[in-house]
View 1 (spheres, rainbow over the protein chains, first blue to last red):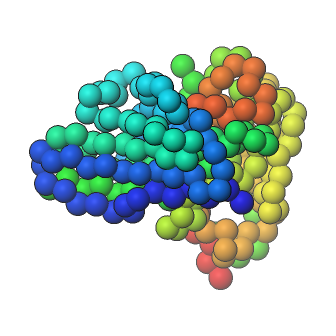
View 2 (cartoon, one colour):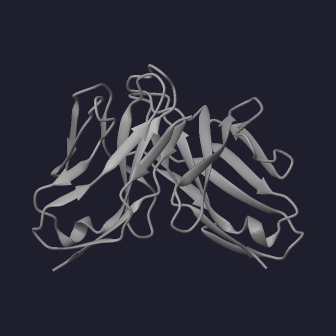
View 3 (cartoon, rainbow over the protein chains, first blue to last red):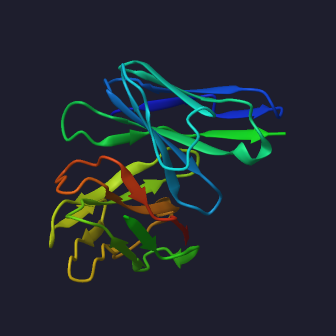
Length: 116
Length: 117
């Protein structure tokens, strides 16, 4: 089946630094990828929709200058958390929408970000 | 806006017990409904879906019926196994009239299920 990978799986960074998270579709192409944030015991909250070759679409309340999204190819989207603060600590999950078949979303395993 | 409310866990059952996880939704139009499962250390996987009223989704012994009159999509399994231990998420697609498309998913908070031998 379709596989989506995320890298890194865990990252610890200092407050004020930037962190980049990669999301790759390994065996299919995805013009659309999604970035979610999940707090403990909370649902996944959609942050933004990443579109290959164009600007990302951000959900209301998500700072586009803080969470930079680049969808450089049909198999790669990156999320950069700029000037990270402890409140940005969370579990970030991406998904990729397969162009073929029923166009379902396939989810990555997530990235645990801890900002100290 | 769209929202999904699902039964809060954790839910702990013995093997072969009957499982129900309740899910209700609020949405405009006619969303598609989904159950996703997240096994420990893995990403979310689609468990089953239903795209219109009265549809029944089923997979791996799990079933859920799209009930428009009660805006519900409860997950059931007649006999759970230890390997079913996971977090279960109810979700709907945000695009009105999307049919099978699962564009812009809205998730419930998830229900942790633990099945003991």
